[in-house]
Each structure stands twice: as structure tokens, then as C-alpha cells.
Figure 1 (tube, rainbow, N blue to C red):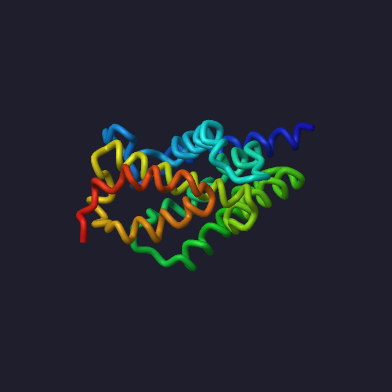
Figure 2 (figure 1 turned 135 degrees about the vertical axis):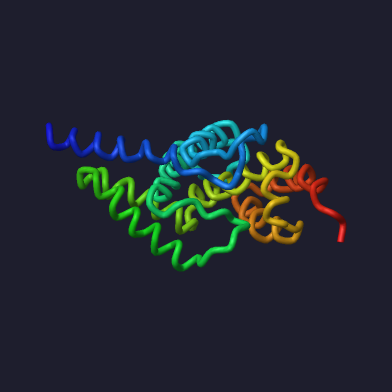
Length: 192
């Protein structure tokens, strides 16, 4: 029992470091950059509040579980902004290594369960993971809208980039949500 608790608390203390990982996205008021711990918490709230946007068979409790775990690897691998320049293969390798270390702190049963949940989110093949990914993409959009364009300005994001990098993923998991969000984002992009 003592060894199990030692491992559980070691993981929980390590997870606290997620609060130190700064994201490109600012808070909705634009006052400062959001940290990955705040982002993960906010996404779990998105899942609860926007559950009616999920497709048939989506288990919101599993979505919440995925969202609270999905960015833990950023403790080691860092955050990679969707509109930033990075090597996706290198980032995926860094994240797998981080997952090995971070989930490896846990007792084997928890390690296997939580790692499998993280892997499911990353693969985005199940209905739960597809919906979780859609929320992960829409939350920064809402922050950019609220903050007057936010990181879209600093990354010179075009409407086409927003549609292909974000909109397609949101529409896949929450089809009725993307048109509503797109209509609000449109004001930040010039008509080409």
C-alpha cells in the first residue's frame, strides 16, 4: 500500500508541473498566456457544457478523462502551437518519450489505463477521442475571438489555415459547432 501511494503521489506531484507550461494562446481576456494545466481544466468544462454537441455513443466521462490527461506530455515535450512551425514526427516522438516517463511513475495498472487513454486521444479514431480532439481545437479559437484575434495575429493565420488546421477537426467531432464558431471567427480574417 505504501509503495502504491508513493507512486500515485509522485505522479500527481509531477503532473503539477503542467501548470508551468505556457501555451501560445492567451487567456480569453488577453491578459497573459494560458498554461497547459488551465487549458486541460477548461477543456474538461467544455466537455461537460458542450456534451449536447457530441455524436451518438460518445461517453462524456471518457472524454473528460482524455482531456485531463491529453497534455501531460507537455511537461517534457512542451506545447506546440497549431499555427507554429514544428516537425510533427519529432514532436510525436518527444511526446511518446514523455508519456513513457510520466505515466511510468504510476503503479502498473494505472500506468496502463491512463497511457491507453492518452494513446486513444492521440489516435483520434474512437468517437470519444474525435469529440475530445474537436474541443481541444475549438477552445483556443474561442480565446482568440474573445481577445481580439489573439495569436492569429502573431502567427499571421489565414482563414484557409484556420479552416484546414482547426475547422476540419472541430467539424469532424462536433459538426454543428463549427459553423457557429466559424461565423464568429470570420470577422478576424479579410475576405480574399
